[in-house]
Image (cartoon, rainbow, N blue to C red; front, side, top):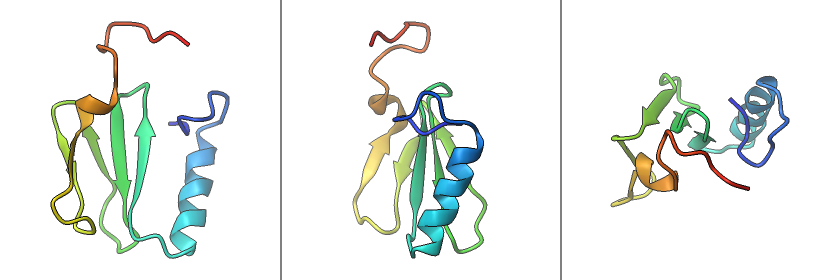
Length: 84
């Protein structure tokens, strides 16, 4: 997985990013992986990380009424190449 804003980052980068945010008191972190077309929710309370894909909906206990269809954040079909 890589940070979406960094096309050359290694797979270790998200682990450092998660550690930094969690140690700063973040209560929920969403890691977006455009290649896998998924979002991974990370929480510091010991619950397992949760990866959601297209067809699933992200909700948050921290944001009452919030829901996001994962497929809606990826503008292209899975088999359609993105242009830059």
